[in-house]
Structures are given as C-alpha cells and as structure tokens.
Length: 168
Ligand code: M7G
Image (cartoon, rainbow, N blue to C red; front, side):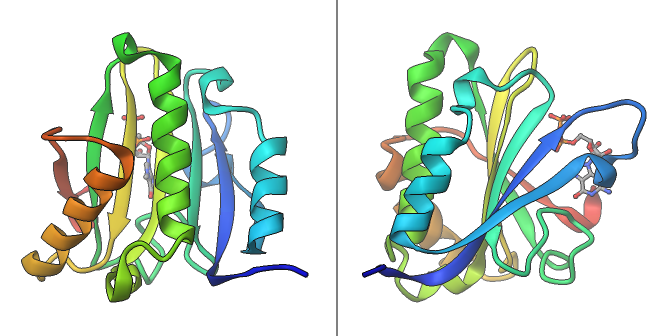
C-alpha cells in the first residue's frame, strides 16, 4: 500500500554548463505522488553536500517548472536565505530534507496552495536556499508561510531576501 501525498511533486536538477543557455541546463528528474516513491527518489539522489558548485536541486509542485517564466511563477516571488559554508554540510542536508518533508507533510494548512516549490543552490562562495511562493501581494499569507517554514527547519531569525520574479 502506498501512502498518497496531498500534492504531486517533481524533482529537478540544474547543472551549470556554459555551452547551453540557462533553461537547457535544467532537467526534470521524476515525479512523486506517494510517500514510498518520495523516499526511494530521495535516497537515490546524490546528497546535496556532494553536488558540485553550480548545481541546484529543485522540488516543485508537479506541472510548475522551477523557472520565472512558468505561468504559475509569473506573479510569484522567492524568499532566499544564504547558507554560509561555515555552517557545514550537515546543516545543508538538514535544511534540504526538512524543507522537503515540510512540503509533503501537510505542514502549511491551506497556505500550501501559495507555495510553488523550493530550490537549493550549491555555489562556490555561498550556497543558497529559496522558497518560491505565489502570493506577493498577500503579506499575511507570506508571514504565515515563513513563520511555519522557519519552525520546520529550525531557523530562528535568519534573514530572508525577498525577490519578485518579474524584477529579475
Ligand atoms: P541563480 O541561479 O538564481 O543565482 O541565477 P546565482 O547567481 O546564485 O547562481 C543565476 C542566473 O541564472 C540568473 O542571473 C539568470 O541568468 C539565470 N536564471 C536563474 N533562474 C532562476 C532563472 C529562471 O527562472 N529563468 C531564466 N530564464 N533564467 C534564470
């Protein structure tokens, strides 16, 4: 018996290559709609700490591409946190896994409909994590989502940088 997830999700992988343009480097890996498949994909993927600089993992609702151009992101935004290298790989893994679990675990009540996905980016200087939402005009919803998110991943008063995709 498979335990269905409330939403279907897709795993994506981005690998920087100068020979291609940005969207050609973005690869859809697979979709998951139940708990067992989620774990089977998660455990087969290279842990984030071993990804090379320039790579991303994204986990988005099925049908929404992790790019600004997707219709579902057009009026959306992202909340970004910088993850300093000195925090170590344990923190990186912890943040990514707990962010994933919070999305599949119905931890956001009705606000889940305002969340499009998450991205973790491995970069030479400073890694980063982003939560992509679609409610930039609704501060109340945003605050609720952020408060919940911080609790899920045990971040107290980390500074999130807010970016509206349209301005990118
Ligand atoms: P990034 O990977 O978000 O940040 O964007 P980084 O500077 O830490 O690596 C790097 C660059 O990738 C951007 O300046 C864009 O050129 C390109 N890029 C990133 N995103 C998320 C998109 C996107 O959604 N659509 C397009 N067309 N380009 C993007």
